[in-house]
Length: 223
Image 1 (cartoon, rainbow, N blue to C red):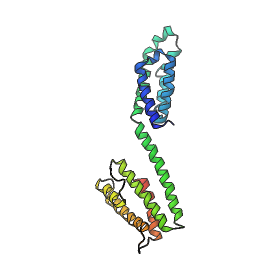
Image 2 (cartoon, rainbow, N blue to C red):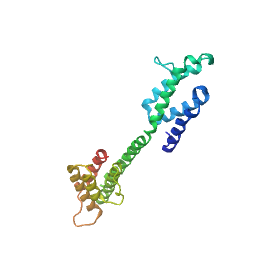
Image 3 (cartoon, rainbow, N blue to C red):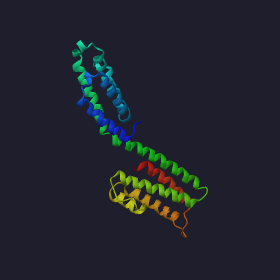
Image 4 (tube, helix red, strand yellow):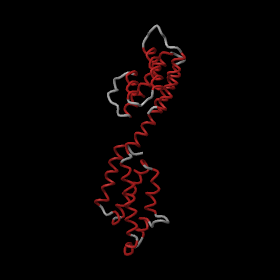
């Protein structure tokens, strides 16, 4: 898979090439453009890759660009109109990829982030057998990180140095969570505080298990 900056650079170049080069008049230039465009589309917009290829290979509906190049030069004018239409469609498919780059990578980052957090939660579960307080502290860190990410996803800034309670309040006042979710998060925040600070009121195994379990649910439901 191409890197984000590489894809942006490649799309920019591929969009500009048809403006400066007669691709239908230069088969080598077209084939290079076609191969690179395929690579980009397969990374960003796979569902339209078959359509892009069809514009080259041809189908029952159109003769395709391949037929244009295979035809004797003296007779290519017979397929020129169809080839131009196919090329315009290919350029349109490629251009559409430009607006999909950021959402595509945000989706990937979201999935990787979720898997990473799930792994950390598994560690917290294992810590339950050794140190309940440490397990709860780790789960609290995971929950706080996730809620900060939720804020970022909703364009809420200034949360980097905030702790759980202010973050929960901001999410509620911005209508990102409802009152039921807020109450649950407040409950989890109280457990996290017990785990983080040595007090007479020690966290129980049930509370820490709630913190880990409910944090897992919020990782899945809040985004």
